[in-house]
Length: 448
Ligand SMILES: Cc1cc2nc3c(=O)[nH]c(=O)nc-3n(C[C@H](O)[C@H](O)[C@H](O)COP(=O)(O)OP(=O)(O)OC[C@H]3O[C@@H](n4cnc5c(N)ncnc54)[C@H](O)[C@@H]3O)c2cc1C
Image 1 (cartoon, rainbow, N blue to C red):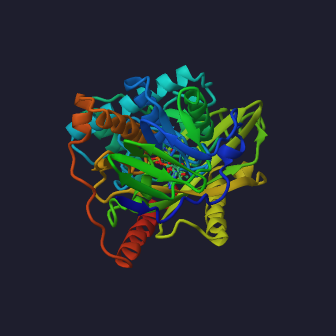
Image 2: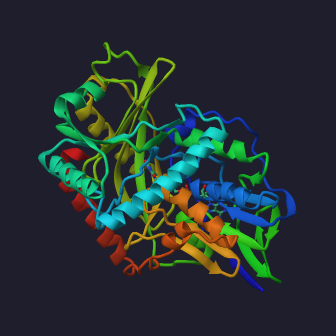
């Protein structure tokens, strides 16, 4: 018998604006009692719910249980900026693309496979354009360096045979209403999601065919007589095979220790303001989505619904060894968001932030997932390297294929990488990683 206690449970730092403006259409069920299943999935984010959907495709008659510590849409999957990106998006490379043309092509094929899977789900579960919008995205440049990074990213895309277009300052102003940007690089393949709505509608769509238990954190996992049993405060689930879609919390289940970087990302969302702000002069079109030309800059996105607009902004990263952040830290980050927003949209200075929050990313030094069968019958679909809308969707799909013994070229290619490399010991990792982040943020300058 092999019992393992889960060391730490997830914590939500701040209420995300996306969750606050999203509506939930189904009741929360908590696990109460003991359940036998064919499959147990732990974690109801992109990875967990995508593996549930893929399992239903592969094993339509099997009983699938999903256990979620919190509620669908409240965790990191429901609190991101909502960019499902098809082109390379390596946060540790300032212009996103760091591989050869072949590696870039493979990465794009994988990202697009995940986006196609998400698109089918969005259709099946009746998601509206406000939840799932295949509008593409712009890498916006506010400095000469940003323009160079866009040019160099454009070159990598061109070598891989990818379409993109360059926008000048006037076009950026027409789209966003802001004179802050010198130019932009538009790629058409990204989908913009309202992340909390997407997660909730995905879960609602699955809920007729799976058992989803929320507010049911797994506190221990035991293997006995060829079966796994996960225990929560009020019940147990036993299944021969388990898929872990818990991202960085995989370490708390005893795997990939000292190989994963836990990076907090921070975001704020404004209160609503009239979509027709002085004739759209202040913030431009109803909907647009900007990524920074420099990966360490600010992601800025405008949404409009029912004549009311909001802007969501994400800047700043920190590496932390704890899961809980202080109020002070969140306020400091909200201040940085305010400065970034005011610099871009001076006409919105009077519009307060309604929500500021943080969420945890999981990165590996060598930019690979923490994936595979980590013990007999126990599969990991973790470590999304900062692009979980896509990479965790893919990891969930691939984990379902691996666990069911489904042979596919996509799975073979997906598994063709080394494991995450080891981090330096603490406090050196903390010092080193935070110093690199700070230096890169300083270098990003006005992009942040
Ligand atoms: C501010 C911000 C902006 C971002 N922007 C983007 C973006 O634009 N595009 C993009 O692709 N990515 C973005 N990300 C990253 C993205 O949100 C993550 O990559 C993604 O959420 C990872 O999905 P996941 O399913 O792997 O993990 P998670 O979303 O972390 O889901 C794991 C789930 O496991 C559950 N869990 C953990 N432990 C247990 C346990 N013991 N028992 C039961 N359940 C457990 C958690 O509660 C959680 O719901 C952003 C993140 C942040 C914070």
